[in-house]
Image (cartoon, rainbow, N blue to C red):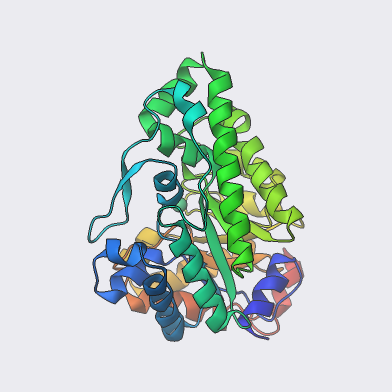
Length: 353
Ligand SMILES: [Zn+2]
């Protein structure tokens, strides 16, 4: 069974031969080139070559392609800085006043800012490995997080807290939703087997579950529905502890939920069982700082809690730090390969939980 089949079976909640493994590795890939990060993140060819080299080294089953969290925000008019050794960041939001939402235009993924480079990276990796590996071309941020970047995170949180301009807030979220859908569909057209949105600012570490339901959930659901209507697979990523909203994340209909390290994996597993697949949740901090034996322990723990009956892609809970040691990435991949075998290692225990 090759990586593509293994990942597809897992996503379709069928039994693969073993637990597949994903690397959330855009920063690791950029770091491995030795070039300034900005040069890599603005160049689809360089992003693709760096990811292909990582794959040659680690042989993971899922390749996640992205250039950070700012691609769509920049395409919608935010000013973005590209430091040499950390991921890009928004330094000036596009919307000084919420009223200016009328002036926002929908970016063309084929021609605006770095969006075409993301598609070039996807096409190149698909050309090379599309028959063999599951390629996830990220559609950048989810609608809530994108709206927060476009408006400025502090301004947006204040808009939400005041709650006096709800109509404009929803108008902004709607424009962001349409922008995300365009990129998600463009990723599928570029050949990606699946796409993914990071709606990290919509988690309980920043907003309440009630606010999530009002301002994030309906728009995430729209993106999921658009991707599924186009016949695609979509993953939803929210950083931090999402235990309080994980049942709602399942209700978005996303086929994959990316689960960060602080989330109660057992609760995520019971909420998602029979409905969608989980991706996670090995700590990126541990991946950077702990020895390989600890990574193996964390990976086995994730498999035992969430993967005994399939439905788990083993991976980091969030993006790995650029300088994550190769030995730890190897330990992650190896644990899935050896310990994650369903016929042998896990076989007798599958239906016991
Ligand atoms: Zn994250």
